[in-house]
Image 1: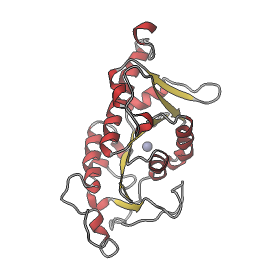
Image 2 (image 1 turned 30 degrees about the horizontal axis):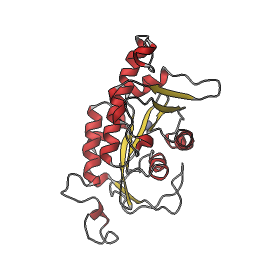
Image 3 (image 1 turned 90 degrees about the horizontal axis):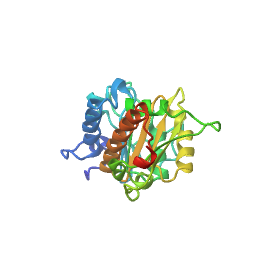
Image 4 (image 1 turned 180 degrees about the vertical axis):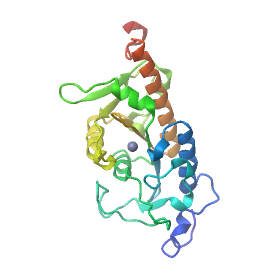
Length: 250
Ligand SMILES: [Zn+2]
């Protein structure tokens, strides 16, 4: 990180030749996620917490065209934890007019504060969306995705930031209902995280998924493993195969 005084030169927060600097990484990862169909049409994205700073992409922009100069930087320690519509403290705001911080900001904060995550990824992957459509809510309004006997389960961490699961574990991810405004998912997501302390992600019906990790690498690899599991689970369900129990359930 630069030793420049960020109060005199806030752009020092996003200026670096290091490709792994969060401002550079967010741009590169958003381009990669765009190619996977995870963040098309301006939806989805990633936030990285680096030390005391949180790096955020703007809301409603083409995610494959983000430049480091578009990145917002916030102190992790906020006057008040970000909630829908709440006022936020910033260390750097892009000079380009019309940019607003990601609508996912309070949702990313759920992962940072409740799981001590260092990165949170939000995708609108069709695999995630289709999976939620195949898991209707029960009479109490709850829905959970469960799958076992899949090698890729080993890539998922307990709570997203703990130890990795074993091949013998059953993966459980809660599904919450969508809201017309993205920010209004904040409470549903935090309730699901309290109810499922071991879950490393939260699915949102007809919308996508939030995945986090103890580092950006962990968040990225877990998002990849989960997307793989969502895709194969959809195919298994459509083929009439049970998701839990392996051969014993067949
Ligand atoms: Zn979204």
